[in-house]
Image (cartoon, rainbow, N blue to C red; front, side, top):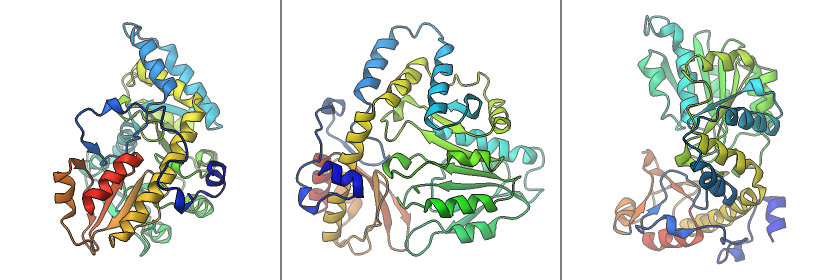
Length: 367
C-alpha cells in the first residue's frame, strides 16, 4: 500500500484506522503537558533520528565556532538543489531570509518612504508574517485575492505588477490554503516577471507535495530567489535553519545584511541539518504518515459539514460556515491549539496535521 501511495499520492480510504508506516521512530515523551499542538504546521515526528544524534553529539563541541560546518552544509545543499555553493545563503529559519529579502527590496525606500510608489505583490491570504518590514519601509502591499477554489491567481498577480513593483512573492504550496501552482504555469509566470523585479518562491512545504523545486529559475531570472526551510518536513522548527537559493549577486546583497554571513545559525543546528539531508527513510516515513492522516482528517471533517480544500501540505484549510458548534471553544476545552480565521467569508481556518492519535482526538473534540 505504501508503494501505491508513493505512486499516486492517495491513501486507501479503508486504511485510515492505521498508519501506512510505523511511528516507532517518534518519541511521544516530547509533549508532556498533554496539549495537542496543531497551530504552527510543525512536524509531529521530528527531528529525524540522525538529526537527534547529531544534536547530542555536537552539543559538547558548542564551545567552538566551527566555521567550517557552514561550508559543509552549503556544499550539501548546493548538490541537493543542483546549484553552486555561491548560490546558497543560510539563515536562522526561512523567515530571517525573507526579512533580509524585504530589506534589500526596500533599500531605495529607506530614506524617502512612500515617495516612489514602490509596491510588492502577494496572494491573499498567504504567508505574510515577514512582510511587516516591507510595510514599515514604505513599500505598498498589493494583496491579490485567491481564485474561487482557493488557488493563487497567477494571472491577476501578473496583471498587478508594474514598473514600481519591487517584489513578487509566491508561497508554493500556499500557506494557509495548502493549494499548489502547477509547475509549468509557475515557470511561465516567472518568465513574465520583469528582470529587475524580485520574484520569490517560498517552498517551505514543497517536500509534502513531491513537485520538483523551481531552483533552476535562478539561471533564467537574475532576481529569482527560492526560499527553503528545515522547519517543516525535517522537523527542525525550533532549531531555526533555512536558506536561500539565488544567483551570486543576490546572495551577495543579502549577505551584506548579515554581520556574520551564514553564521546566524548555531553549529548544532547546522549539524542537525547535515544529518537530516542524509535521512531519506525519515522523510519517506513522514510523507506517508502525513498523507494517510491528512486524508483521514479531511474525510472526518467533511462528515461534520466542513468543506475542505485539497491539500498538498501538512495542514488542512477548511470552512466552519456549516459547522454547528463553537469550533474554537471545542479546541480550548479539549486542550488543542489550532489556527485562526483567515477569511471571514466562509469562516475559513487551518489545522496542522498531527499524528493519527492527535487527529482522532481533534475530530472527537469537534464531534
